Length: 120
Image (cartoon, rainbow, N blue to C red; front, top):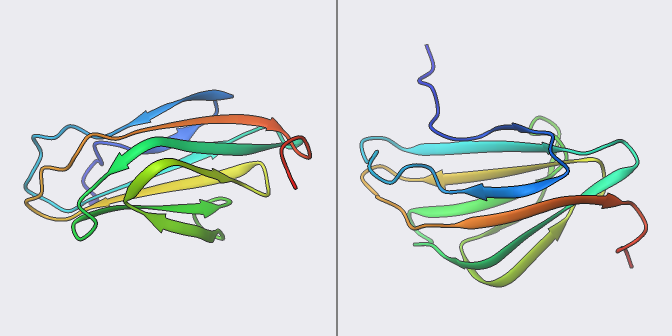
């Protein structure tokens, strides 16, 4: 049986924040998968104001769409004002942390917006 992940899940709020899982759970690799779902006519914008992870042991991958069929928008572990936009009404955020690594704090903000407003 799969162990219950300390993080992740399906998010259907139109906006909000995603934070790091508890930092005292050092015994295992942690993989968190958040699927953010918007209304069909919207897309999702995701922003990390500041990110400073240990890139070897800790990183994010942002997927354009649901976890199963998504195309990667890239992996990231550090920077300022990192922003991502989905092409559809679904976006997946995957966080990986390796074994025996406490991990750093992170905060990501997301919101859904009508498609076409912020697109080039």
